[in-house]
Amino acid sequence: MNKTIGLILLTIGIGLTAGFGAILSPDFRAATVLQAEASFSDADVDRLHTVYCDARSSYKLQDTEGCGDTVLVEHADEQSMSKRRQAELAALAESTEVLILQVSQARIFYRLALKKSLARWTIREASGTQGPAERLSGWLSAGGAGFGLGLLLLVVGAVMCRRAPGLEAADLESGEDGPVDFGVLLSEVAEAIGSLHADMVAQPAPTVDDLEGFFKLRLEEVQKDAMARLCASGPRVTARHGLEGMAALFSPLSAAERKLNRAWAAMVDRHWPEALASVGGASADLRATQAALEELSA
Image 1 (cartoon, rainbow, N blue to C red):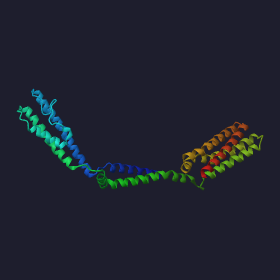
Image 2: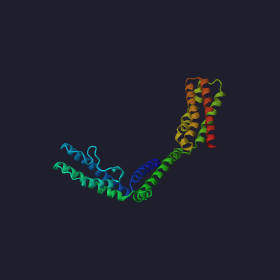
Image 3: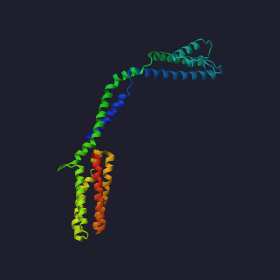
């Protein structure tokens, strides 16, 4: 439940920080709009200039005023856009060429586009350039509160998700008989298997009734109860000792489980030497698990 709430808070926090973080400061947004309008007006200038030059070409008129290889204003790229447009309009005004109606109309539309571009660039350049500090303060006034709320939710959600495995592990450890520590349960299993191995060693020639009615039943009791609970405690161990600690503990513990399974199969097949060797190996692996747990707890 805590993890689910944490994930919800994380999602909302990411959305808020992304949304409010993308907001532009009011002055910078206005400057961006002016820049876009000026750029669109420049596109009209280029398009209508091409139409004008095509009209001159279609009526076999000499290239001039930027058409063909001619230049309307020398070193235009070295000037600001507003000064460049002023110079281009001044150059067009100096022309005394008499044109036929179609070409004259195309030239008029081109001049109107230049005037519109001049007006756009004059406003844009007058707005100036906003510095980083001004942009930051403007952004804080526009979206800082929403971004801060999203960041808070993100941090709270991350903490809840991080703590959720530990809380779930604590819940898993609580049963009808109260909390059961991994070390306590491991000691019970190790003691039970050690006792089983000692009794098996003390019985060099067991009967069939001893094998199936005594040793095998004791082994099954450990496997079905305490050993099964130990093997299912992976999430608790990971939450408490981390992945490396979990690997250090479950490597010998898994080996012990496999050997106990092999011992059970050997008892079913009435293969006493293999059953005895497997139980002894499982007992050694359980002691190795206890030693690994002591190192982690130190």
